[in-house]
Length: 335
Image (cartoon, rainbow, N blue to C red):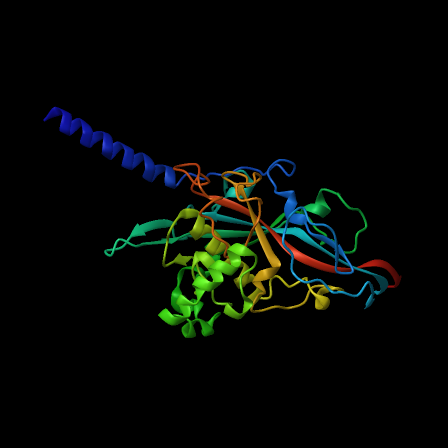
């Protein structure tokens, strides 16, 4: 009897410890040299011709070599590369800034805790809070000086979901994504299996813009994951949702293709082929488990994600977003 009581107490103690740790802010500053998959920068192209690929896949590039821009007046050559420009935290603990070293900065405003809960049919659902950072790392590291193709600025917090009422309310979210009602049916969701295959092989299909490949559905644009398979899958799904949300709210813009040669342009439905991700925390994705260390939106994480999430300090996540950048690289003739 004593052994049973002792075992029960140990199990309860373990449960309480896990519950208390869930509220502890975890994170780390990413080392820009060792923690970022710099292969994601590639391919590099000029006039649509790749200079170096490092084995990475690419989207189509404008084929013309010379290019011009009207304001400022510029004559140059078309270039293409993948620019590290944004960073995203996915956290269980409100106001926990994973990318800032696991710093908690609660202003006193209530926000829902993250959770993973099992349903009666043994499926799981989850919810998280996310933070969106401006991270023009090539500029603030001064890797390239006076390059008009690089976004300027410093590392900065750009958006937090804790203060966004639509992030935790499905009814309010409809105001932002009214088209989601068209895709909440088995037929539309079944089509996402094809998107999963395409995203894992290369890029997902923009024709199936409601799909997040192997990770689920882009809709609704909030923090509720209706089909939680794993923590890696759920976190990547929410990164894609928040990116789509930022495009829909005109808080970030498209930068690739012929339309992007002279600057960013609005893209409210988001071209999901213009992004690649790499994990920074809890385990930097700098190895080459599947032959690469950056992933397209919707690609399967079954291989590379193994061992990337673990109890206590490995249940919050940070990802770097690389976006495709096409630019007219040249000299400004007139301001």
